[in-house]
Length: 451
Image (cartoon, rainbow, N blue to C red; front, side, top):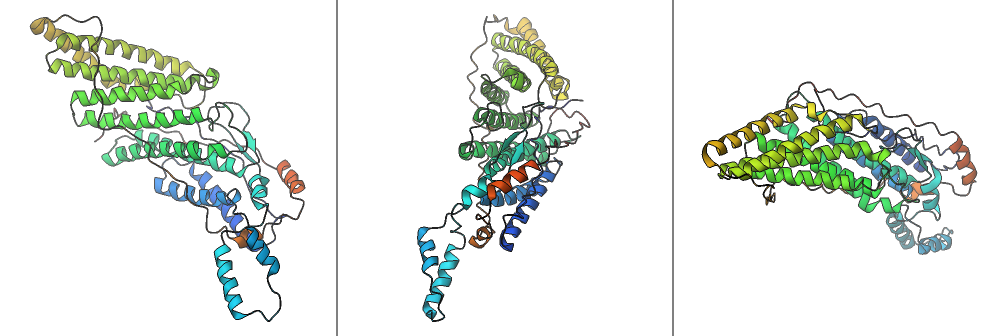
């Protein structure tokens, strides 16, 4: 029994109560902060369950994303609004038409205006702690920045989708609906990683630490790895449906390139941190290069190019042997994440048997029929996959929650000694407890087949 996908651990964070007792003046602010606390806790609770539905995860994450943005996307009060508030008549003789105008103005400014300086204060008032997936045994990163929590939580949601896909892939039998969900989850994860890398990392108060989950190169690696793994599902489907060998070879060749690109993003990083993950990417790159040459060799045999076929299958065999060695190196390498044994997986073993059968057939037919010379180097694999290539599913974070009204912002007192209160609060922050991830049991090796 063996898993097929390597998974880095979830990011863990401190409990955040959003304690605003000393800075809250009104019920509206209390209510929205209570909703924010509940949304965060609900989302964190879902990370313990990779079998939950993606719809449930979407609902919980969107709710939190919409609410947390209220702490750092605070609409500033316009100077005209401030002047109008200062000049607003207080006498009882205010004209009825002015009252109606004021009502309309209040409605318009309800979401647009907030007290001056609330943005900077709310963004940095709470302290957030987050562990990083690759930092084994290291303390969590700590920032006084609500956007830091927003980004780390977003990355964790993307990780959940990858773990959800791994959970489905470990089932006793993968039905067509399951294969589609695995494929969809991996594409969605890639889209999430891309959204936070492209549109949010640059807004952090401090530049991301190298090898952290907010490191653009680490996120690029996650994106490319998700795309490659989604294409693995496509390959399994193509093999199951007995598509043309040239199509499968093209897909496998592109998938090998994707794993290579993912690995390249980590070349300049500390190998004691990223080494294990890189071994996984390298073994997958090598395996799918072998897979591509195997199917290309089969396609050449069908075209009666037996000498070229033997050369391809010979190189495929050597690459598979290299892949097996990389599997063992991966297992012995220390680092973050679950240790899998891909060379013991039935998909791997079945391919090994199929490659041996094709190689023997090609050599036999060349010896009896074709008598072609085996070239010293394999022919160029001029196969460009035109179908089945995976792109990230575009993802956009929701807009700020409508609960963040000017009335809610007005309930935040900036006249009190906020910094003093903030220091007192930070001393009471709890430790970060790792997320307890359930063990994903492989009930039966199914060879990655799709029924």
